[in-house]
Amino acid sequence: MIRRLLPVFLLLTVFTFAAQAQKKTPEQKAAKKATNITKYINSKITDKAQHVTATQTASIKTAYIEFYDDKKALREKKKKFRADVKEFKAESKKPQSAENIAKLKAMKKQLIADKKAMNKESKEMRVRREDKIKEALNATQKVHFTAMRAEQAAKRKSQK
Image 1: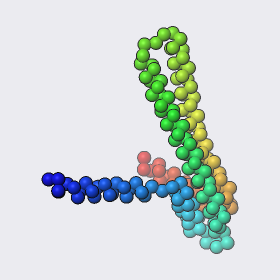
Image 2: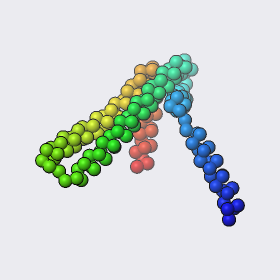
Image 3: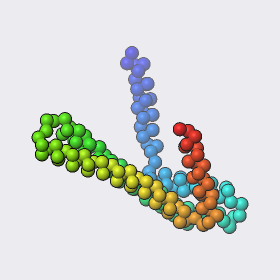
Image 4: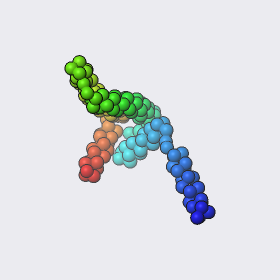
């Protein structure tokens, strides 16, 4: 029995490690995104002089790298936020005195404000990324970039 299961176990172990090794760094993801945007815009423009240049692609990549860095910082904030919520729930289950009730209400208000701030920051991150990308492109390229984003939004909406 063990002889039969051992090869299967080893095979699963190898595949698990192989899957973990395929995680991409933010720089790799940013390069791929920038390349895809460049290819899309260039495919829509017939005039070669209007194509996206290497410096424009580099600035798009930089915008994505900054976005991924911001995203990582936001994930850390959310992790801390979840710990605070867990602490609040544990504290609220205990029998409370009048002063502790006031303290819990203040803590709840703070948690709600933190949650709103994180949501706002998340939206601002995306807006900053889009603005930096549009800043790097010229007028003709911006039109095609906006059309690409509109297509993506329509596709997401149709999937829901």
